[in-house]
Image (cartoon, rainbow, N blue to C red; front, side, top):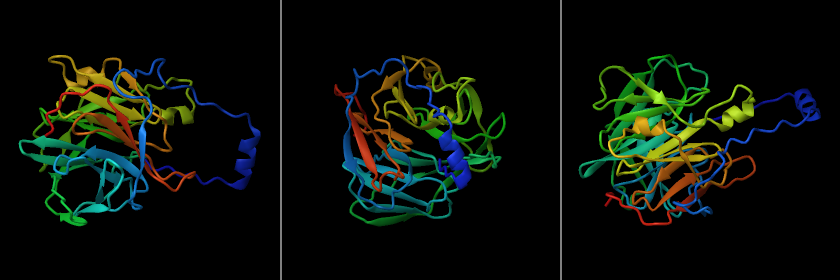
Length: 320
């Protein structure tokens, strides 16, 4: 989500003379550090083209690497970087535009895997339909650049009006797509049931309300923005879910026979997270031994960092 403010000088002076407003504390009372470490390992991101990272997802076909994309108005490009932040590889996506890319996911299908890009941002609710782009994940090897031109478009609309959304989740078992809305007091959960049509407009199904990141009637504008849901990730086993807003990372572990939607409507654990400058993206690693976040190039820094939160106990993973 790209936000810029242009304020006349007189308004700035008037604002500075007012009493400072404080955000309400949006973190839940207890941050659960039993699963992951509190302090992340931080890596400087080498590629200077990554300057407004809005999505990150672990690659299947390129082990120990991550796909990253920039926010709205950026090029139709994905970047591939290592878990140490190094790498300058680029994937060009022909035939599609970056209207407002907000999240990315990778899901395995047999020995293949598919990349999903969520062109679902809509700050001002201008667009009646949204897009999710899907294509087979390539093996980059040592190539510095590749081009993909066979890309499926899943066009969809919401059943209850235009929405802004920045988080998609792919169920690795059913291949259903879940979208979580952004600019609402209660964040809605929608599903695009597999197989999604690439020939006609799909209508997303409202399947629940997220049991966290809820606004209060007394929240000011800054506090509401803190609660925007900006990214999410489902483990490759389908058992664990993380969802991020600007202040917190929320965690659910599914119980037996529970659906994704049912899990998201339960109370969440709060995972360790050091708040970042406009930090919007989160992803599990493919071996599930950690989760990663990435910053944007903020006004206080010209650097972008990849943060790694290690798991304390080795998980079960079917990634490799």
